[in-house]
Length: 149
Image 1: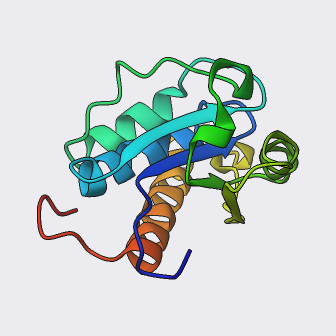
Image 2: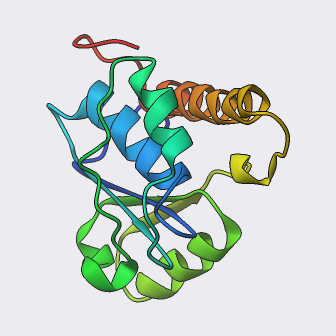
């Protein structure tokens, strides 16, 4: 799949489906949701991180309805592209698609929950990850003509 080419279906994966992959899913849905089917999963399941809700709210994206899913909850081979955002998720994505035509890409995105400090320091880490994912999405799939961020 070439740069600038948006797949028909896109799955984002991280370790717990609580920070990076739901953030990527929400941003991608805002940008490309009219033209692609977009979901997210984790290797494990965990509740949505409150800082994710806060930094998405800041840019007008409501993520309160997110429900964590794992690779066991979806048919990974039914997606055109899986973007893994953590090493563990990348391994699971490759294992899940070993005998299929699904493309898998690894985007090494740092885990903002590893940052310690004040609430504002931690929020800044989540904002940096949000903005990094947004930049990666636009660089990889282009800027849509519809809603923008």
